[in-house]
Amino acid sequence: MSLKQSSLEKIILLLFFIAFLFTGAGLLSDHALIHSFPYGIYAMDATSHLSFVQTLYQRGNFTYLPAYMAGGYTDALSANPPVIYYLTASFAHLAGIPWYDGVSIIMLLAFVLLPFVMYLIIHRFHPAAALFSLPVAYLLFANPFFSSLSWGEYPFILGVLFLLAGLWFVPVIRLSYLWLPLALILSANFLSHASEFVVLIGFIIVYILVEYFQKEKIKSYFKSLLPLFIVTGIMIAHYFIIFKNTFAKLQLSSSFKPIFTAGYLVPEFLNNFPVILIVIFGIGIFLSGLIILNSFKNKTKNWIVPVMALFLLIITYTNWIGQKRALQIRLLWPVLLMFFFGVVFYYAWTKIKSAHKEWIPALGAVCIGVILLLTYYTPFTHAGLLDQYTWESFTWIQENTPPEATILFFHGDVYNQHTMLNLVQRRTFRVKSEDQVQKAQQQILSRTFFILPETFLDTWLAYRKSLFEFGYHYSENESLYQGREMDICQFDYFVLTKASQAQPLAEYNIAIGQHLLENKKGELVFNNPLIAIVRNLHPGGDCLDIK
Image (cartoon, rainbow, N blue to C red; front, side, top):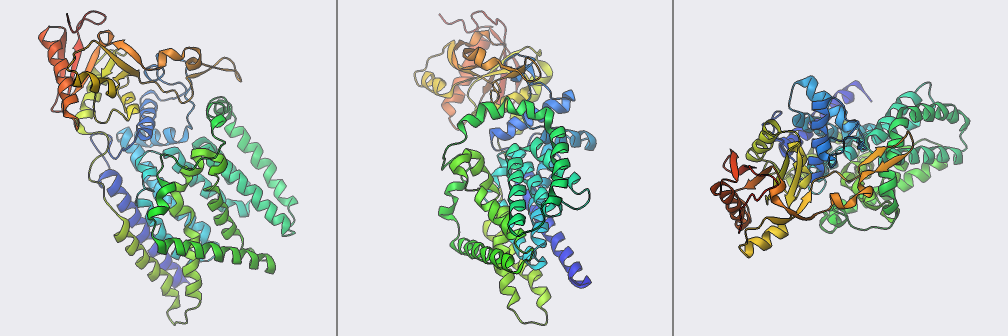
């Protein structure tokens, strides 16, 4: 590539990076770096991760789940992949910004970097193919693909980022000491999201097998693979033991079965996917096959990038064995399928006879990018699950209630995304909406409701008995963590939402609060236009004084 072409390529990359960053920031954070409350959060996966970052940010470590999240236990292990939490909490401390803004900034940058790492991979095939590939990544900012970020699939996004970085390193693995950065990437991959770690290991095996069938000398690979896996094993050993006895043990038993749908929307997306893009991807897949065959025939290395692309495509269709993790990876189809898009325009470009031929990939990339942006970019119109008033109530609870206080939430529109309640950092419970609906319809003011405790049960409250032996608080006493009929008078504070899309439920909340206050059984300790918090003056007694 000439100096002139190289400079043009850098300019185009900078333009795309700015466009991606501006678009993503508009969707996620309304183009603001700092917010007064967690902004751009649209699902409870996101609020779960926020609560973990909040804990680490404030405590400085996250070895154990906080007691309010673990049903009161103090020895329940934090088994989630740690990279996302340590990365975002550390960044927030260093930058002096709120921890939730640290999460938004880091995850937006990781999300935007995905297509550029794939660009570097495709660049190995040809710079023009890489440029033509880049515009299709704009679909990341269209639904359902943007939900990977807005719904809080943070570990998955980091996992794919490290997966792509690892794929770039695989072809140079046998060069002196380049196994070391790959070992670091593999370790970070496992500590971010184990699913993509498995995919990366799988491609290393595929790559070496292809090299073997190409009659390459593969003994030199083993000189790199041995230290690669030793160093990786050492770095992931501590977390691997925890992972093996939590997520692997408790979730994989139900994961290896066919599945064809999940809460990710992507399996059905092809029903509305533009036909022209499907045709382009189809042609790209066909061309990739031809490139591989021709490369094998002529003993060249042109097969590497097409094989990577086909491997990633096949991985997204392993829902026959991989349950939701195989469907989850489809959320990043716009990145994983970039090569199939770019190779079509690349081959069309090779047929053009023009004195200004070197300008065409850059111009074409910009034009295609603008078309996709204008067609698919739809800005969000609200801040997400949380709002200023709800966050004020959460903050008040954190700062003004005893650490051992129990908090009962009556109906609120967003509380069905119940992991957000962990953000108050107290033992929280919520009234089951269906039960409150029934009592509101019957106009019954009751002391007993079906109440759901908010406890993090993904890993069954695992705790260590020894280095390799684990116990599970949940399995030892399941009934404590399941919803049941409870007397609301045993709770210390009641959180009452005064406005709702289901306004009769909000009016029921108001009636509960008024009854507590009128009968001198409660004290109004917090009030804003949306939320009222009433302290129970007689916990364990007859707080409603119902005859």
